[in-house]
Length: 447
Image 1 (tube, rainbow, N blue to C red):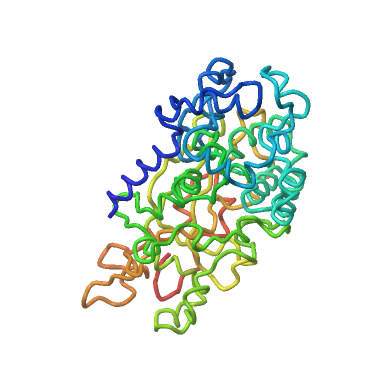
Image 2 (image 1 turned 90 degrees about the vertical axis):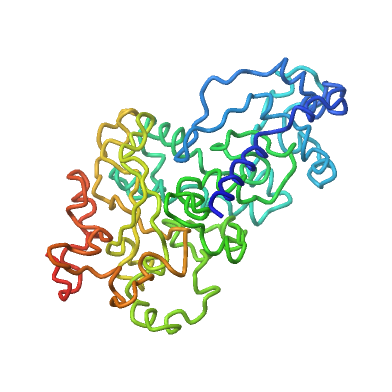
């Protein structure tokens, strides 16, 4: 199954790579008068003749370098999806209704003059809101705008939160927008274009589409969400919701959650529309003995997740993550007890935070690095009923794979928990409140 999924990734990667040579050579897409927006953008040879070369290499984000598409491929409307777009409500509108600029000219500078908008959804209220008012009015604070990430950056910079982002030094903001914000999306990045991390540009001839798992979601959520859900990591299996139920991302993450409700939240786990295991699995706390004992101890993922991908200590704009990507499994004290009130212990994942994150952007050290832990609450998308925690060998105690105990001179399962000794010196102060030292049951005898 895993090999099949990897093949699917490769195949779908080909799908988003753009139109085929046959599409580009199709005379019906190359003979239109170029003295119009549509005529120019459906004439492949003309686009090649007038395109402006890139001045910077696209940044790919945590999933690696972005695939490269030539500028003329990114704006070519012909090929797959073009006719569907033309037949849709969006295709009946004038190009200038959304993009502004000037139509009916063969002069590129004139066409893109004045208040031309390359990405109309960057002005979602003005452009998308005419027809999609609820979504447009709510989108500023939706989960894809990075408010939680901005909050941590601001707190570590000695500010009060995300609303103070504009108070950061200009170079710091520039570094964030260039390196971190590439995976944060406006309407068009999910519904019209490839995500920036996937190379950018039109995905299906300007056709407006429902985001699909492989070509939209996994392109951005590759190193963590998609990596886990598809079972890419060595020794892991795909999530049971994929293999048994055939779920995709939108099976759980509905449009009301993804578009937002107009209310700003400090981070994604505080959002009221976030899906919960209990939405489908009713009466979890009393469904079996294990749940009855531990329902208030830790989140479901402590038992039902596999090892998950993590990395950290990013030198932004330079060497990238200096704690390189690896599979891990760490249980710590709940980092967000004000939000996830039920749990004393949860799974955590290392963040990219390091004191010198922004040294290449004229910020040698964070002013208040200890304002937040270097590990975040996490809920890996790699759920199985039977995992390394729940599969206990015959004759062993039920806790053999999760409690810490001494077997001769060897401590069993200690590697599952986040101790102070697991931390680098530079993060000990920041993460001191979530390590399990002194917080485990006395009967375990752990010093």
